Image (tube, rainbow, N blue to C red):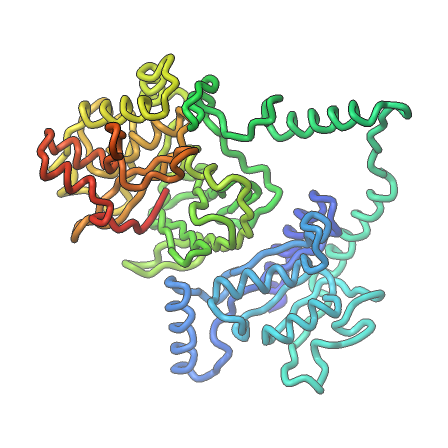
Amino acid sequence: MHETHEKYMKAALKQARHAARLGEVPIGCVIVYAGSPHENPENRRQSEEVARRKHKIPLVPGQIIATAHNRRNTDKSALAHAEISAIRKASKIIGDWRLDHCIMYVTLEPCQMCAGAIIQARIPTVVIGCMNEKAGCAGSILNILEMPAFNHQATVIRGILETECAKTLSGFFQNLRSSPPAATKFPARMPTLLLAFLLALTLAACSGIPLGFNARPPGVVDTTGVLAHEIVIPTASAPGIAIAENDQAIIDYSNAADGYVMVKYHEVGENKLNVLVDGPQGEQYIYGLEAAAWAVFTLTEGSGEYAITLCEQIDGTKFKVVLTAVADAQINDPLSPFLRPNHHVDYNENSSAIKKAAELTAGMTSFIDIIAVVYNFVIDNLTYDVELARTVESGYLPDIDQVLASGRGICFDYAAVMAAMLRSLGIPTRMVFGYTGEYYHAWVSVYSEEEGWIDNIIYFDGHEWRLMDPTFAAGANGDPEVLSYIGEGKNYLARFQY
């Protein structure tokens, strides 16, 4: 059992090192799902079934369900302690405030706030690395965790990897004392206006915003209808500032404020791998992964908490949890998830479809004209692939260049090609999955500064917009009945947006 405790404490130490890289006091915490607290097998089965229903996937005993590190200065919040953040994440994963089937591992003895939260969450066991003689409330100055006056007490195990945990802290403070941060110096009599300008210039350069201070993501078209600048595809990065990681995989949510997270499995075997993203609006997005490479998943339900779960197939429809993370995404620009490549709409500046989009729209300034040109190109150059629609398997993803080269595709392909081309031109574009009648379908919506999201249109004929559904329009051949159906937004029920 001691070896098991050391294994999870090492994971907590990894979180502590993440905190140190942020300049935070290095305290890390992980919460492990230990199975049902009940001894009776039938009670255990029922308890775990409840957890499965709430989270929609099996929770396997021994899985780390939450990781966190100290972010008090980064988040400017006295509540951003490692233990509090881990409890919040674990509760979201479990689907309950009671964590009575979990074990907490923390590198430093909890303070009074965190100890109180542990009791409130009904965590039965807390494993501590090193003690905190000045502020610890699990035996140093108080012992809130084992106080008999409360209606719940936790079993406390102390001294697991104590030396390593203590050295992480002492080394951090030693480096802090020996290497004070250098202050930025300005001339003593620099005019206030000039200083303000230089500060704004510095912020613009660091954030990648052009000197005109226009925060609209780059592209050919400004959606007010004015020509902007050359195509620049937004790139994704995994800087490792906010991550969850174990031996099997890594989730990097450092750029959640920009509307995306990145995921990578370190190794991919024969078992099926899934990524589950639970958004703040309650919808669960399920993605498949087949390569040991970084994949981008956009956060399309606006600001709020997103639970990201990686899981591996055990047998048939049974999966086990590999890794979890909860990202509190306060998205800077709600349009940003719809302006970049992602797992479902994958492209880069070398994609033939993107080069074609630039060629077709060269010199154009009209938002309406550009959409019409791209739309007509897609419906004129693709035909519906009936055989692929009949045989397509779960997990299919379009290769937009291959689709264009073949001239054939299913609804997913049509929507992905159009979304990629328009996004590369700086037009925010949603690829929407949902129902048209009884059939599951895909279509696209675009954003205009004047109109907002245009959800049920394709072009403006001087009187009204038409629904942007390139698949149906391609097969319509001008049939008035089909075009009339396309024009009725009530015929479409959106479910997912990418």
